[in-house]
Image 1 (cartoon, rainbow, N blue to C red):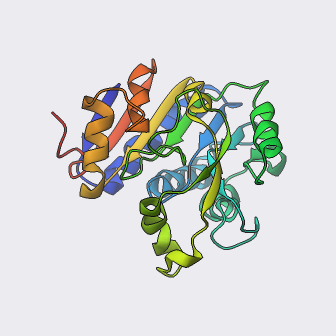
Image 2: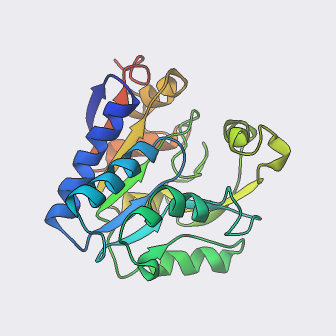
Length: 239
């Protein structure tokens, strides 16, 4: 696990973009595993800026997203489908038919999404980390063997996300469909970004703690190629 500590969010985003750009420049048909949330927005802004200014193309790329809420329409303003289009897809030349996001609320929906990745290998999986150590929506206690599945969101996670729902936890969905930890671990490379003092405990547990389902992100210690990019605040409890 390579840990890069920089000053602030802008530098985290710039460093993450270097990793992403190196891949896409060397492999134009790269398969991108993408994440939502506030952490990767700066990365996506850099990808759009570079595409517009330097012509880096994503026309041959495919993307597979980590997760989506259950129970809200794809076109809801807070759906991850909407988020990805507003924050990345509409600003680059990726083809709509090459964009994949999980959707649905049944075991069959989960199996269908898992099958859609049968014939590809994700070249780079972008991750954030929850304040409780979750990756995707794999909450503490999730088996490392889990593939795409439906999860009941912990109250803390719903509280963290209430800021996107008019600060009203009652508007935050109670369930999500997410890639499982086993699915995430299939990616060739993992790129995890985190900022802020509220992530410091989770980052410390991920990097320095035991590999345990108590901190789902700690499983990344077992992956052969992980780059963690954090600001000083998120890195403040690292050994």
